[in-house]
Image (cartoon, rainbow, N blue to C red; front, side, top):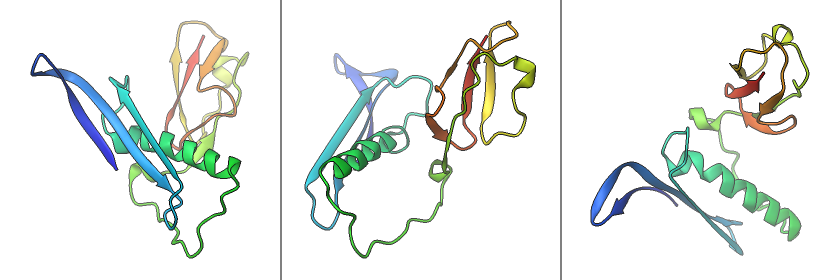
Length: 141
């Protein structure tokens, strides 16, 4: 279950202030785990709980299932990719120390250069983290 709620203060909604949330259970055929995450005023992202928070809940559930040795559900149906948020994740490479002009042109993600330097000082997300295919890696010079 996911939700996006506008924040109210003194009985009035605050413009641009939201709580994004998602509740997930696993495994579906015999639930033994429940995870609920809520984020107030998420920055620099679309304001939908199902888009922003659901992937976080999935990661927590997947890790918990592994730690608790709960086997995969039998007879599941593979989910087809239908929406932009169903795009595959890609692993970010390490660009630290690289010259800006040497950044690859055809990665499965885009670069946003921040600063006026010629070398990469740091990057977000860091090397080996995953982002959605077509997303951005922030390169600080």
